[in-house]
Image 1 (cartoon, rainbow, N blue to C red):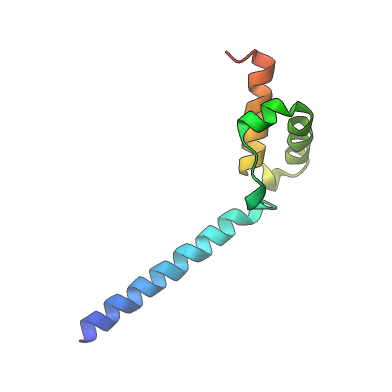
Image 2 (image 1 turned 90 degrees about the vertical axis):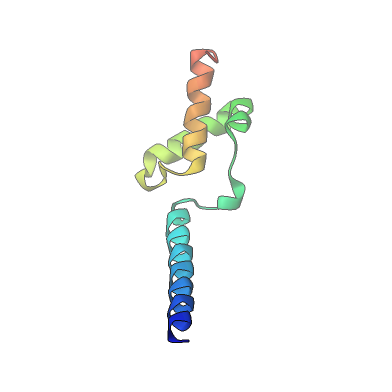
Length: 82
């Protein structure tokens, strides 16, 4: 019986810990529900440039999905998609 309680407690601690890590990881993204795709940024190049400038100005955002996607879209656009 004691072993089962320890296992349940350990599982609860792991679940709470992983939730906390996910929250800290997503803290750099201002609105993680508003992530734009690379395709969207390719179709909206002015927004990609603006997002890239925002990412350049704030190094804490550089790893966010929007920063990565905007930069990738700009690279595709300027390289001609090859």
